[in-house]
Image (cartoon, rainbow, N blue to C red; front, side, top):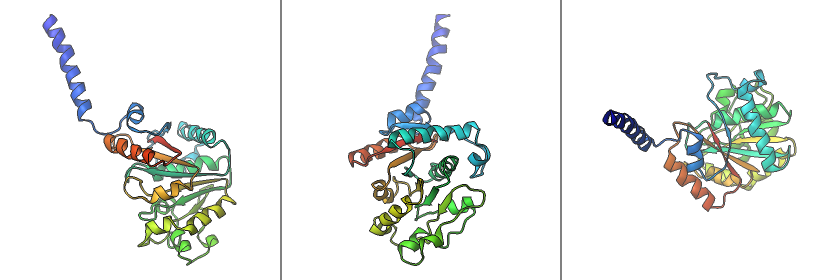
Length: 253
């Protein structure tokens, strides 16, 4: 009896330990707290809906409430309830940063009519496809002097926020992000909008988000459960902290 009792405890325990050692992906809040150097300020649960306007059509849902909690925490972090520019990035493509940025704009639109969503992932823009908008001209074209700002600002059908598309994919994306003209553009935008949500390129892949992090008031790092690699997350967030890139916070998707 003692032998079988011992086997009944040791075998399952060994199986669990081996499974944990072989698992290299972030799974839980505990993993985020262990491998990310940035404080965790929110969790976004999975939804089966593909609509970019879930929050607008379901303002009292538990899904919307998760974004409201993040919005409230961002107000505490920035110590104000308006004039906030937020950058959204992640370690790699597919972590859900664009998905998060769209819905974050949606929850801010419930409180203010002056909300702007910006697609600054100029190497691989995708927000326009999700919102059904045109991307023939955008930020890159404005920075190149090919159009005026009012020509590229859009209000997507069904949305309660404005949208600024990325525009033509440029050959010199890194230089455009670091240009003085981009800084002046966002100074101008802040005069007209209470909240600006900016979706950038993955900071673990290219350095574009590094440059914009200095312009932004708060930077949100999206971590995807069952996808983001633990050690890559640990190395990347430690490097960002060592580089004195401030105001970064984690969100578990």
